[in-house]
Amino acid sequence: MTRTSPSPGVLRVYCEEGARRTFVMALDWPGWGRAARTTEAALEAFEAYAPRYAPVATAAGLDPPARVGAGAGEGGFTVDVVARVPGNATTDYGAPGVVPPLDADGWTGDAWRDGEVQRATALLEAAWAYLDQAVAAAPASLRKGPRGGGRDRDAVLEHVLSTEPAYARKAGLRGPAPTDRAGHDALRAELLTVLRAGEGRAPAASGWPAPYAVRRLAWHALDHAWEIEDRAQP
Image (cartoon, rainbow, N blue to C red; front, side, top):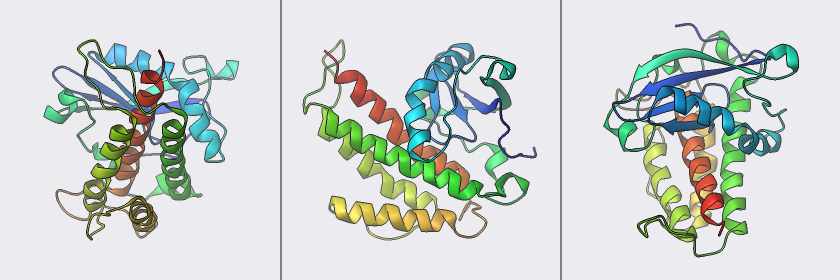
């Protein structure tokens, strides 16, 4: 499948469809992805999160997507499902787990001309900043789930930070895991350099091409930022 540059009025997504859960992931807006038990419900959830994603786009210096589902002639966006990929156990567990074939060529080709690499990584940086803002605004203790489960604020942040070294290795960055926040911020800066360099193909058979790595990293940060916001409410 040939991937093209973002078009005004169209939000391109792919659906990762597992046995019990489907993820709808935006191709051109890293971090914007939602899941539900069916594809139809996941698409509805995805569209409903347009207002929540808007501050991330704004922070990256971009005009945010708006009014998803409205016709382009009305000043909004339509959602275009450009690919469907089979999910796996990770999908059903609750995280996107499949690299779509359209990411296989990395940053190469017409899809990534005119600053698209910088645009994508700017959105990743904005997603990280949004998570920090959500943490700063939330109380230390978060509302528990119906069975008393769920991490508190600092544990959610630690979970995100502790997974990112493994994500970085998938993207081709090697080195020891950071031991403090300053070290983690340095890892993120180095990771951005790696993601922006070269063609961005997967560094190994089990690795992630750069477009997917950016999308997965941003999704993880925002998914937990939104969790913190939701569970900070009474």
